[in-house]
Length: 396
Image (tube, rainbow, N blue to C red; front, side, top):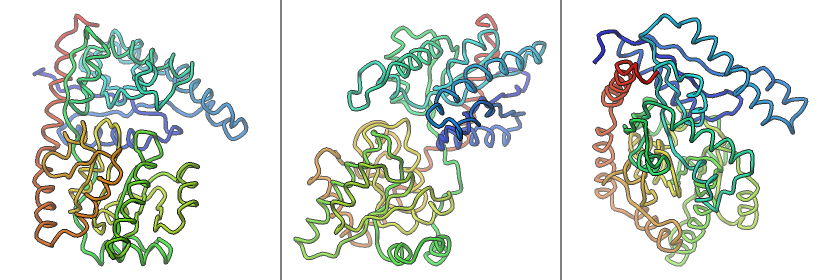
């Protein structure tokens, strides 16, 4: 360990990109590092050219590129010049999609947090479900090159670590992984307290959450598999109808439905499918606390925070049986193969009909699983990573 306590410069994401999970991750870094006595500075691209998106909406992406890769690059160089005589400062790029900044930090101790390599794999043609355009491929290759130049990389799951090591082939950076702790005080709420948090919903949704419902939290990205979840839910409704059981609504919380989801809902208007768009974190806690099951059928993930969030609120979790979901859920989650619609629906139906003691056992396993994801473990790992780059000045 270094004798000096380092100051950490967290390079965070561009706010107009609205990458909620990455913004929450940067906030988590600031919170846990301040708790252990580090001086932390949050440093992110400011919106300059991006303000013109209201007048030039078709150029929004390019205006953002100017802010992130031109203006902010000069800001990083200027920042480095101002602190050039200080030797106890570590730059921490909080999202690997900003790894291009590693080229500008080659003479300063720095690390990168790698969340996933899905976009890189897509650019390489490894994920045909998510084709990438020319500019996207160029950007992802620059990100991969930036990662290759980074002296120290910390991934948020073993799956991301393994995938990144494979893509870098003969990786020069030291790559490790540490899982994320919760980024909010998620815990079970009493029914009345949870319902009180959700009074902002319209009357239909209020009456729905007062009864049983199935919950999903996520966005419209292809890997979230929202469309697949709706197909599984349709199968579930058929199964319950055939068995003479009442239908249980599905609530999708997160991004507003895209056209594909809207089309499915319109074509299947008899199915009880509802949406809560961009709920606050306290509202999410209330939804987790009231839901009968939380379903997370993603094809891919960097980590899978909602799995832990649901468990922390006492909600049984059903997730895809592949990494990193099985890494996060451990033995506490129930796993499905989402491509097998009827089989997945049968699993959900079985859980919905669990006796009280089996439901309680699953909830208790979820609480026990949370012990694997501590802030101390997370902080200690990053302190060691900072020491690595501070003690190996030959790389800068």
